[in-house]
Image (cartoon, rainbow, N blue to C red):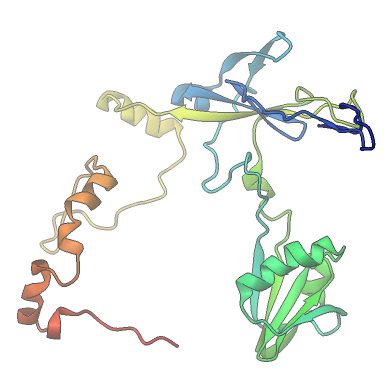
Length: 286
């Protein structure tokens, strides 16, 4: 924070500024993103399936009693989705062999690296007020298009020497982003202090270590049917039956590290197995 010309005054010199440097201290329980608040809670598997009731003490000291709806099942957080991420990733759909010539080109580039082109679209061009909804890459370079997802898909035409990249439909992944929240219990917005964000709950579901065998059949009777039905009985002579074990992947990698180093003694036997020089298949760089 800078307060202009509020510091000491010196003869024949401009008045200095008062500068405050603020350090934000994280709250031990709440996290904020915009006007929304997030709080983590651990619940049991029984609570996730049968329902739960938890208490949250808000920032102003109010006690909130939060309950799930009857018959509602709480699911774990979707893999790869981080609601607190500062960077909102833009997903692109690649349509190989397509172009959209009917949409006006707003910018061109000789670059053909897709990663660089995506960065240009969401940073440089967006900073200039150009919202790129698609771009087409061919041997000559790239053409950026300003359009919506629907406009790009309606205008696409086959073209064998081109690849068309379209900003993915924002509503396609919406079901995977849905979270449990208390409406209107977030922070007040900057321009409208009577409009509040929402309070989102991030659930960590605690699974039991094991279950009594006597209760398994009862659970199977009320839960949805299994997704995997083995087609083998396990009595076949060419079928191996294995039971899962708990193994730390980091310890597993460390224990095998010495045997994974190329040029070591671990690969000296490869000559005897018909691999010349102890080398595996080679890839040709294009």
